[in-house]
Image 1 (cartoon, rainbow over the protein chains, first blue to last red):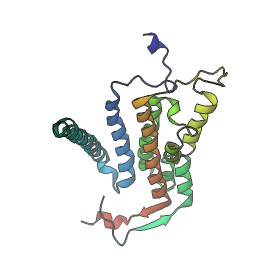
Image 2: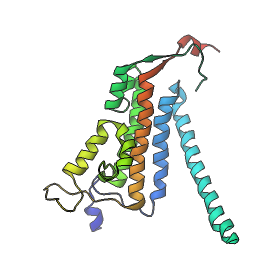
Image 3: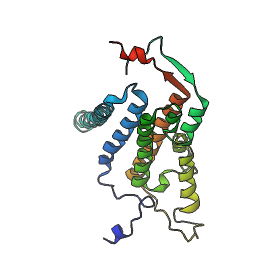
Image 4: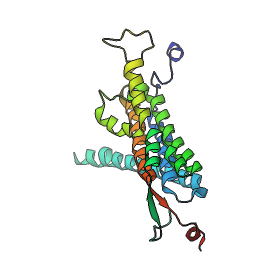
Amino acid sequence: MSTLLAYTPFLDPLPLHDWWWWTIIPMAFGVSVAYKAVRLADLRDFWRQALVMTVQIVGTLIGLAAGAFVLIELIATRLG
Amino acid sequence: MPPQTDTQREVFSPLAGLLAVLLPGLGYLAHGERQRALLVGGGILGLIFFGVLVGGINVVDRANDGWWFLLQGANGPIAFLLDYLHRGVFPTPGAGHFSSTPAATPSLAKVNEVGTLSVALAGLLNAIAILDCLFHPVRDRREERAP
């Protein structure tokens, strides 16, 4: 509680050490919004395109993490 | 995005490029694209806001994280302002900190990495936006309406 009261936004970091991986979603969304806003010629379909790109980024990272887990925890341990 | 055709040409606009350097998204206003300016500016400034909120102001540090600042600096004056605020106004506690202003708590590990990465990604995206404003495609409206 005392830690929470002493918290000053932007001067103190958020206590997200156990939850840091959730930050990938807003980061992917921000990247998608800025990139699609530059890239799309027609902005009528903008929000759907930005959401699709967000899902693609997050999905790819989950896939890479799953692949690394299988390689390191399952395959490499059996070979070793 | 529709494929680029031979009829699509680009205009060189130094004013729009300069405005894009000054503030993310501002260059598109010079091209008369208000909605695009808001979306680009919102996305890039949102990433900066998020990065500093998560990692604290010390995620922008020209002296100690020089390589990261190469990317973060592409955000323009806002990155240099954050660096100045971090080092000059709200320094992290340590030797030489006798200021009456509150000190910034240094972030560590993943929280620092997330904040640093978020501001660096914003810089990379702003670099794309600056180039797009400098060499802006002029699209033929009649061609867009064609089936």
